[in-house]
Length: 285
Image 1 (cartoon, one colour):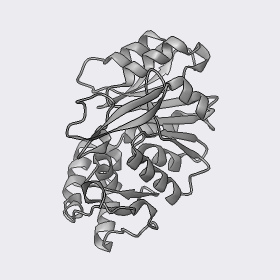
Image 2 (image 1 turned 90 degrees about the vertical axis):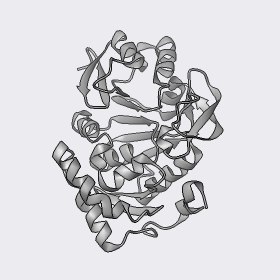
Image 3 (image 1 turned 45 degrees about the vertical axis):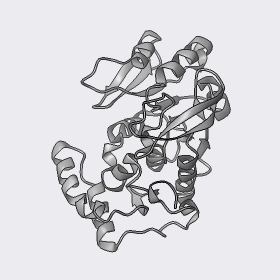
Image 4 (image 1 turned 90 degrees about the horizontal axis):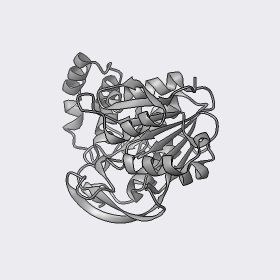
């Protein structure tokens, strides 16, 4: 068995090898389509209880038309994708799906298993997507989900971390929720195994992607955004600035250092949600 009791080699099994019982699958699909409003979330939380009570370590299911292999007992984002995908930055994804011009690039930094990027790929077949995920196990699951949807021609993966300097860094993995993995020691709520992973700078990553035209970054690297962005802004010419950047920023808290840094560099906030902001460079309209 793998981490949290997940079967070893489960990424290699054919899609639908881990399908829910029919009644549970129908209930999960119903929950996915409930609007993510206050009342809608309460209803979805109530209806999903029998599905989660099954305690399935691995689940194969279509999430709003996109195929995923989920480990809902191991990863909070997997649990949300199973029945409440709107809670996984649903407003932000809808904003990008609406606002990005055709053939734009979306670079998902901290992609996890692809819940954000692959749903956006399903909404916008014209977009070019590049996922960045340093955790080897999450990256393997991400690649499996890409293959389940035949997205390999549109969605690339870099199994690296982002850091102010290239080289190797230590990734501290959360034992109960891999979405809390961080390069900052102590940031993971429940410390699991620490692993050494390769690291690139943001400018090196943009070079590797070959992104051009309208570029959007979604950054979720658990507190390391400021260090990565500060190094990037010091070294990158103005022509390399991405048009859009999504950052974690809780609505009820003061603006964090990363958001303040981009505001000072010529960005403005275009969307603010409960947990994130989406920023765009001023004068790029």
